[in-house]
Image 1 (cartoon, one colour):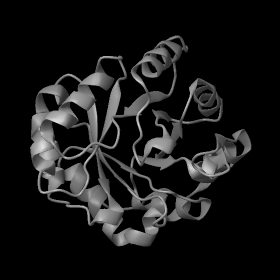
Image 2 (tube, rainbow, N blue to C red):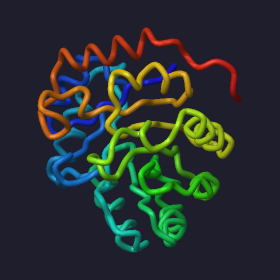
Image 3 (cartoon, rainbow, N blue to C red):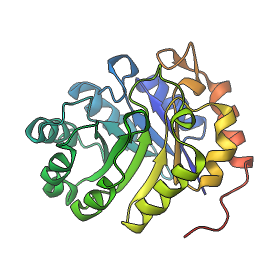
Image 4 (cartoon, rainbow, N blue to C red):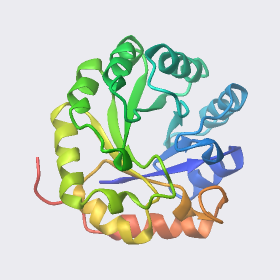
Length: 235
């Protein structure tokens, strides 16, 4: 089954995402970039809010912000999020010859926290980083878009390439996610690709990704994702 990841910008949107059927609630500030981070105090409050929910409850993740590919800076950003108790942390791997160094610097953290490496479809993502993520002990890998004005994920990579990403990630022991200005029209073909999660922000909001989560839009995405045909074949 392909799950629904809903990116939210505050506690009110967390509540809407939960009642709307999100499988993963992703704490992200869209006004601050592709992977804009919540403040430390806000993350701490969100973890407390989420911890009070009865089981079963959605998974909780948070972004570590749009950081330069400098190992010490990336490690410090991830440590800041980890200290708040967020169980899953998404780390942006922007186009850089130093991306592998950043991953390797996070290996000790990956032994204690569940980390997701995010590659960007509009930056010629380096699939050779997937084995590096696997060796470092990351939980998973995602494909997203860095420039939200550059078009949807499917404008940059076709479904064959996305399927190869999913297969290679799983070969390296990684769970998989696909995101990047996804629309309702993307749900069926991307579910067929077989990723573990599809991530949404703009499609579930009124006023675009910097607007507000709309319960009706979220329910529509949830329904479409549930009804779409699952992946067939593959590894």
